[in-house]
Length: 230
Image (cartoon, rainbow, N blue to C red; front, top):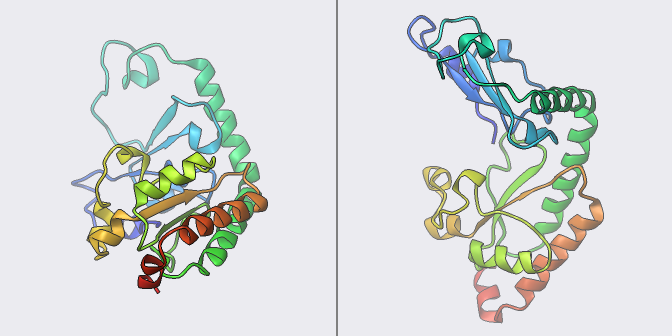
Protein backbone atom coordinates (compact mmCIF):
# COMPACT_ATOMS: atom_id res chain seq x y z
CA UNK A 1 0.00 0.00 0.00
CA UNK A 2 1.15 3.54 -0.72
CA UNK A 3 1.77 5.70 2.31
CA UNK A 4 0.53 9.34 2.58
CA UNK A 5 4.06 10.75 2.66
CA UNK A 6 3.08 14.29 1.72
CA UNK A 7 0.46 14.49 4.49
CA UNK A 8 2.92 13.08 7.02
CA UNK A 9 5.55 15.65 6.06
CA UNK A 10 3.01 18.43 6.56
CA UNK A 11 2.66 17.32 10.20
CA UNK A 12 6.35 17.90 10.90
CA UNK A 13 8.22 21.06 11.83
CA UNK A 14 10.67 21.71 8.95
CA UNK A 15 12.83 23.83 11.20
CA UNK A 16 13.41 21.05 13.71
CA UNK A 17 13.47 17.79 11.78
CA UNK A 18 14.47 16.22 8.49
CA UNK A 19 12.16 13.90 6.57
CA UNK A 20 13.20 10.92 4.46
CA UNK A 21 11.29 8.43 2.34
CA UNK A 22 12.41 5.13 0.86
CA UNK A 23 10.99 5.33 -2.66
CA UNK A 24 12.66 2.16 -3.94
CA UNK A 25 9.41 0.37 -4.74
CA UNK A 26 7.75 3.35 -6.44
CA UNK A 27 10.48 4.51 -8.82
CA UNK A 28 9.74 3.50 -12.40
CA UNK A 29 6.20 2.37 -11.64
CA UNK A 30 4.41 5.56 -10.59
CA UNK A 31 5.17 9.29 -10.99
CA UNK A 32 7.46 10.57 -8.25
CA UNK A 33 8.08 14.23 -7.39
CA UNK A 34 10.36 14.86 -4.44
CA UNK A 35 9.41 18.54 -4.22
CA UNK A 36 5.72 17.71 -4.20
CA UNK A 37 6.24 15.17 -1.41
CA UNK A 38 8.12 17.80 0.57
CA UNK A 39 10.75 15.39 1.90
CA UNK A 40 14.34 16.39 2.60
CA UNK A 41 15.82 13.11 1.39
CA UNK A 42 14.80 10.21 -0.82
CA UNK A 43 16.45 6.87 -1.52
CA UNK A 44 16.05 4.51 -4.46
CA UNK A 45 17.68 1.40 -5.93
CA UNK A 46 18.53 0.65 -9.55
CA UNK A 47 17.52 -3.02 -9.56
CA UNK A 48 13.87 -2.13 -8.94
CA UNK A 49 13.77 -0.46 -12.35
CA UNK A 50 15.72 -3.16 -14.21
CA UNK A 51 19.07 -1.48 -13.57
CA UNK A 52 22.22 -3.13 -12.17
CA UNK A 53 22.16 -4.67 -8.71
CA UNK A 54 24.32 -3.07 -6.03
CA UNK A 55 23.81 0.61 -6.85
CA UNK A 56 21.35 3.10 -5.40
CA UNK A 57 21.04 6.79 -4.76
CA UNK A 58 20.39 9.13 -1.86
CA UNK A 59 18.83 12.33 -3.16
CA UNK A 60 18.73 15.31 -0.82
CA UNK A 61 17.76 18.95 -0.80
CA UNK A 62 20.21 21.66 0.22
CA UNK A 63 19.89 21.44 3.99
CA UNK A 64 23.28 20.85 5.67
CA UNK A 65 23.94 17.25 6.71
CA UNK A 66 26.47 15.20 8.55
CA UNK A 67 29.15 13.54 6.41
CA UNK A 68 28.41 9.84 5.87
CA UNK A 69 32.02 8.71 5.28
CA UNK A 70 34.91 11.14 5.76
CA UNK A 71 38.41 11.02 4.30
CA UNK A 72 37.89 12.06 0.69
CA UNK A 73 36.26 14.71 -1.46
CA UNK A 74 34.06 12.37 -3.47
CA UNK A 75 30.34 13.07 -3.74
CA UNK A 76 30.65 16.67 -2.56
CA UNK A 77 32.61 15.65 0.54
CA UNK A 78 29.66 13.65 1.86
CA UNK A 79 30.81 10.08 1.14
CA UNK A 80 34.49 9.31 0.66
CA UNK A 81 35.58 6.48 -1.62
CA UNK A 82 36.07 5.82 -5.31
CA UNK A 83 32.79 5.95 -7.20
CA UNK A 84 31.69 2.94 -9.23
CA UNK A 85 31.25 4.84 -12.48
CA UNK A 86 29.91 1.92 -14.53
CA UNK A 87 27.20 1.20 -11.97
CA UNK A 88 26.30 4.87 -11.67
CA UNK A 89 25.88 5.09 -15.45
CA UNK A 90 23.70 1.98 -15.31
CA UNK A 91 21.52 3.58 -12.66
CA UNK A 92 21.16 6.74 -14.71
CA UNK A 93 20.24 4.85 -17.86
CA UNK A 94 17.74 2.69 -15.99
CA UNK A 95 16.08 5.81 -14.59
CA UNK A 96 15.93 7.38 -18.04
CA UNK A 97 14.31 4.31 -19.61
CA UNK A 98 11.94 3.86 -16.66
CA UNK A 99 10.67 7.39 -17.06
CA UNK A 100 10.04 6.94 -20.78
CA UNK A 101 8.30 3.58 -20.37
CA UNK A 102 6.48 4.22 -17.09
CA UNK A 103 2.96 4.52 -18.49
CA UNK A 104 3.29 1.41 -20.65
CA UNK A 105 4.87 -0.53 -17.80
CA UNK A 106 2.24 0.46 -15.24
CA UNK A 107 -0.56 -0.52 -17.62
CA UNK A 108 0.95 -3.95 -18.27
CA UNK A 109 1.61 -4.66 -14.59
CA UNK A 110 -1.87 -3.54 -13.56
CA UNK A 111 -3.40 -5.77 -16.23
CA UNK A 112 -1.52 -8.77 -14.83
CA UNK A 113 -2.51 -8.04 -11.24
CA UNK A 114 -6.17 -7.44 -12.02
CA UNK A 115 -6.37 -10.68 -13.98
CA UNK A 116 -4.72 -12.59 -11.13
CA UNK A 117 -7.00 -11.16 -8.45
CA UNK A 118 -10.17 -11.62 -10.50
CA UNK A 119 -9.36 -15.30 -11.07
CA UNK A 120 -8.21 -15.84 -7.49
CA UNK A 121 -11.60 -14.63 -6.23
CA UNK A 122 -13.07 -17.92 -7.42
CA UNK A 123 -11.11 -19.77 -4.71
CA UNK A 124 -13.25 -20.11 -1.54
CA UNK A 125 -11.97 -18.23 1.49
CA UNK A 126 -9.29 -16.16 -0.24
CA UNK A 127 -8.55 -12.86 1.52
CA UNK A 128 -6.83 -9.85 -0.07
CA UNK A 129 -4.98 -7.34 2.08
CA UNK A 130 -5.17 -3.63 1.30
CA UNK A 131 -7.08 -4.19 -1.91
CA UNK A 132 -9.21 -1.08 -1.45
CA UNK A 133 -6.20 1.14 -0.73
CA UNK A 134 -3.86 2.90 -3.13
CA UNK A 135 -1.26 0.33 -4.19
CA UNK A 136 1.59 -0.29 -6.57
CA UNK A 137 0.34 -1.74 -9.86
CA UNK A 138 2.48 -4.89 -9.72
CA UNK A 139 1.87 -6.46 -6.31
CA UNK A 140 -0.91 -8.27 -4.52
CA UNK A 141 -0.95 -9.65 -0.98
CA UNK A 142 -3.38 -12.45 -0.20
CA UNK A 143 -4.05 -15.32 2.16
CA UNK A 144 -5.66 -18.73 1.88
CA UNK A 145 -7.04 -19.52 5.36
CA UNK A 146 -6.35 -23.24 5.02
CA UNK A 147 -2.80 -23.09 3.61
CA UNK A 148 0.24 -21.98 5.63
CA UNK A 149 2.17 -19.35 3.69
CA UNK A 150 5.59 -21.03 3.83
CA UNK A 151 4.14 -24.40 2.83
CA UNK A 152 2.33 -22.82 -0.10
CA UNK A 153 5.53 -21.09 -1.22
CA UNK A 154 7.46 -24.36 -1.23
CA UNK A 155 4.77 -26.09 -3.27
CA UNK A 156 4.71 -23.24 -5.78
CA UNK A 157 8.50 -23.17 -5.96
CA UNK A 158 8.55 -26.82 -7.02
CA UNK A 159 6.43 -25.82 -10.00
CA UNK A 160 8.61 -22.86 -10.96
CA UNK A 161 6.62 -20.04 -9.35
CA UNK A 162 8.58 -17.64 -7.12
CA UNK A 163 6.33 -15.83 -4.65
CA UNK A 164 7.10 -14.47 -1.18
CA UNK A 165 5.54 -14.45 2.26
CA UNK A 166 6.57 -10.87 3.05
CA UNK A 167 9.12 -8.20 2.23
CA UNK A 168 12.59 -9.18 1.04
CA UNK A 169 13.99 -7.44 4.12
CA UNK A 170 12.34 -10.08 6.33
CA UNK A 171 12.51 -13.09 4.02
CA UNK A 172 14.25 -15.23 6.68
CA UNK A 173 11.78 -14.38 9.45
CA UNK A 174 9.14 -17.09 9.81
CA UNK A 175 6.49 -15.22 11.75
CA UNK A 176 3.39 -13.18 11.07
CA UNK A 177 3.91 -9.82 9.39
CA UNK A 178 3.96 -7.05 11.99
CA UNK A 179 2.26 -4.81 9.42
CA UNK A 180 -0.69 -7.18 9.02
CA UNK A 181 -1.06 -7.71 12.76
CA UNK A 182 -0.97 -3.92 13.26
CA UNK A 183 -3.81 -3.73 10.73
CA UNK A 184 -5.83 -6.04 12.97
CA UNK A 185 -5.42 -9.16 10.84
CA UNK A 186 -5.71 -12.42 12.78
CA UNK A 187 -2.26 -13.93 13.40
CA UNK A 188 -3.22 -17.25 11.86
CA UNK A 189 -4.43 -15.57 8.70
CA UNK A 190 -1.33 -13.36 8.64
CA UNK A 191 0.91 -16.44 8.79
CA UNK A 192 -0.77 -17.67 5.61
CA UNK A 193 -0.14 -14.40 3.75
CA UNK A 194 1.62 -14.62 0.38
CA UNK A 195 2.78 -11.80 -1.88
CA UNK A 196 2.87 -12.01 -5.67
CA UNK A 197 4.89 -9.42 -7.58
CA UNK A 198 4.64 -9.21 -11.35
CA UNK A 199 7.29 -7.93 -13.74
CA UNK A 200 7.41 -6.70 -17.30
CA UNK A 201 8.53 -10.10 -18.57
CA UNK A 202 5.48 -11.85 -17.11
CA UNK A 203 2.56 -12.70 -19.38
CA UNK A 204 -1.19 -13.23 -19.06
CA UNK A 205 -0.60 -16.91 -19.80
CA UNK A 206 1.75 -17.16 -16.81
CA UNK A 207 -0.90 -15.59 -14.59
CA UNK A 208 -3.38 -18.23 -15.77
CA UNK A 209 -0.83 -20.95 -15.04
CA UNK A 210 -0.20 -19.62 -11.51
CA UNK A 211 -3.90 -19.51 -10.65
CA UNK A 212 -4.36 -22.98 -12.11
CA UNK A 213 -1.53 -24.28 -9.91
CA UNK A 214 -3.02 -22.67 -6.81
CA UNK A 215 -6.38 -24.24 -7.56
CA UNK A 216 -4.71 -27.61 -8.12
CA UNK A 217 -2.94 -27.43 -4.75
CA UNK A 218 -6.16 -26.54 -2.98
CA UNK A 219 -8.07 -29.36 -4.67
CA UNK A 220 -5.54 -31.81 -3.24
CA UNK A 221 -6.38 -30.75 0.32
CA UNK A 222 -8.81 -32.93 2.30
CA UNK A 223 -12.42 -31.93 1.67
CA UNK A 224 -13.03 -31.15 5.34
CA UNK A 225 -10.32 -28.46 5.25
CA UNK A 226 -11.64 -26.88 2.07
CA UNK A 227 -15.21 -26.84 3.35
CA UNK A 228 -14.14 -25.16 6.60
CA UNK A 229 -12.96 -22.12 4.65
CA UNK A 230 -16.23 -21.57 2.80
